[in-house]
Length: 613
Image (cartoon, rainbow, N blue to C red; front, side, top):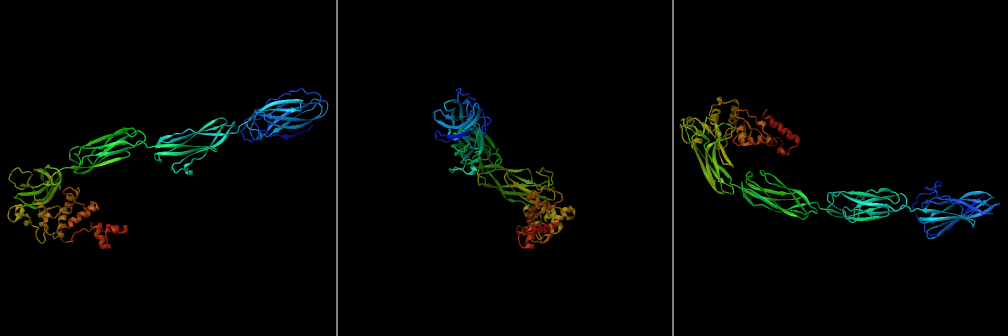
């Protein structure tokens, strides 16, 4: 027995690549269910070839062959050679035909497979029949499956988000074929709005595996924090399709501060009111914290404001100026995104004390006369108490003791205050302060704003040379008003004691003054201050009276300022003079300290320190 194939007729003329579902079990390259075995429709007889059954897959994928297995039997009593014909029909009746030849002896049966190339068949439902001449026919059905085909839809159309909020682009990918396939999808956003998308604006492709007839959703998160408000084109693309859309990024609630206003000037102590208009210029409504701030002495204030898009409201804040200095100050109303500042002049009287006049030496029994000029350099009329103070406890900080005068001045107006006081009389009367000892005292005339101060030395009456007289003549009787004063004269002039009666620390400071004589023109011993006095009186050095003075404990800048003031009191540069960093640098290297290298600066500092060792 033998068989041979023949002829393949192409019907329809279209080669279509389709995805195929189930095919006959056991056939190479096919999966799925096998179709029913069909009995011959003719009983056979004589010398006839009978088709006793056919087997085929219920479905086949495009590109895979349709294999129909036919069982035949020679029902006659002699050897025959017959042709088998397979006809495949679609719904429109178009026929694809192929066949095979079999040879069988009497009573023999066999099975043969007829193969149809599915490239000639478009996807769809087909019926077929297998016949042997006109003697026997068998029929069956098969489906040629549709291959995977994908459609893409944009589910993000009209997406709008507020800047800073993540946007989610969403697409649906549908497999319209009959079996599972893979599809690649990527997203791109034209972030720089140049009309195209670069590789940095495109996401990596994602591979989707989608069953036939199924749909899958894919999303992409887009951060908008670095996008300016506006419209951005985006594209969602699969392997054979793309869709375009627009992402709108809105301006968040943005609160502008407009039309801020405040008075140009207020009197110190009066309230100041600052107002402004807040407008939400963003695309959406929102809430902001409005803050009001001013100079030192102004308590910051906050307020919460909620506005819809394009809505505006007025806000105002009032603050006291009682704790604000006389000056022009800035008052600000601000939100997270904007601020407006107004300059307000806080006006007040300002009593400047100048032209202090008083004795530098006061002899026991004399009356001390102190005077000063008081000028209102402020911009409003004011009334202040101007008082005389004297350091009666030796801490270099003059104390008030009730000697005062009330002064009222218009802006630019001035007056002279005068105090005539008896400090040193021992007659049992009640004076503002106890009789002063034979020491040096710091005194001054003070307003609420400024002061003018100096020092006087109290001396015994016998030291005046005349047993008394006015303090205005004291400078001419100073025991140190000569070419060069002795240690005793300087000590008497400054402290009212002899040199051997004072402490070792005071002796050392007197010696410093003695060694540096002569004094600068016009100065007498009582007016010459020690380094300790300069540090305490001018720079606030915290040194208790009687405590040993450590000059090097001051910071270096203060040391050099104190030394400069101390040196200015003498004509001579010899003696205990302490050279500054700059002076040493000029002597050693011919330039200022700042111009030296770090190594040379270190050497200068070491040489400076050696002056105290």
